[in-house]
Image (tube, rainbow, N blue to C red; front, side, top):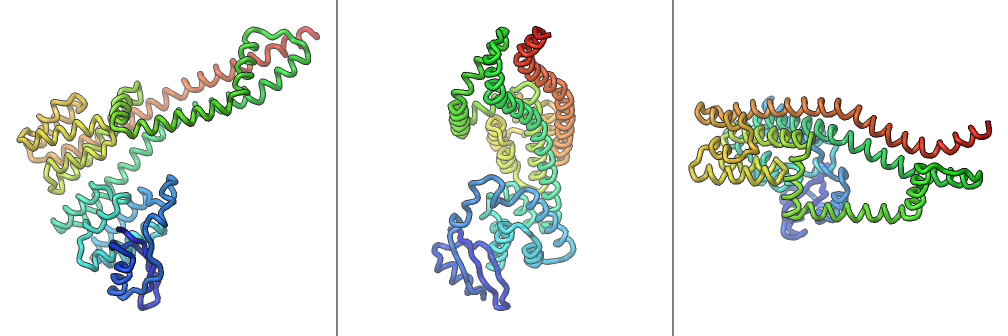
Length: 401
């Protein structure tokens, strides 16, 4: 099991990190063998309760990117891997990453490879990251691999932020609209209805409908919120099941407008990762299997795994991909051309750049097109409510005049 420790070196320096051991006493013995005096050793789960809360107690993607790029720069300047990690351990402000580096350093001092050590931290380093590092160790070009990795991770993060921004905008606007309408229905409309009753005003049909809805919502709004929470929880549980994931992933890429962006994003991630793995000498079948995991979509993952099975039986990659209509003709032709010229990695990276540009253009078009549409919907919704509650007052003022 993985244990988290606090120790003091012979120079009096406090050290934190992780260590693999069967029992706590084994970890203590291991630390003493490294001339470290253990202060505290405990199971990882006792310290990582914050993992349950998103964004807390985690190593973010930007921390991994910075770590990777700095490591590349230090190795290029002639520093040894151990010395570079020691410097990064001192410089990083993320406590979890700092302790992870400490655990990696202990493994390296024990004679393990860097790829073996980071494989113990799947929450931080992805399988693709580990495979590329392993390839860099074999070729002796670890500094260049880290540079490629950092660039790739930066592109991934930028692309995901772009897509999230496009999908988040309408979601936030619709949510705020729903909240505003609920506030009006629960708090504002009942007050106006009391005023109308005290003035004995005959309400128009539209106003009576709004007041009726408000009265119902005001009585059962806790039930609505509770039921909504149950539905969301049930949906998230269902989505995690194999059948739920298959159904959800197949439907989401068929959505109008958003489906195209999601598909282009998946193709960008797949072609970039596949090209990166092929370029470092990873076997085609292994590269396909690992690339399928980065798609995050059951439909594409299944299709890529089927392509890997056909390739393993001797079918060329391009031909194997042509059996699946979810791979566009452009990508298939670039792969076939790459197989013929021996430049598959370059062609795949060109494909990823093309798909990424398509995503950027689609996001700009979608955002531009949705802004006036959302404003119209908001205007109609709010206008209807205002009209329904103000009309009786206007009628009363007209009667007084």
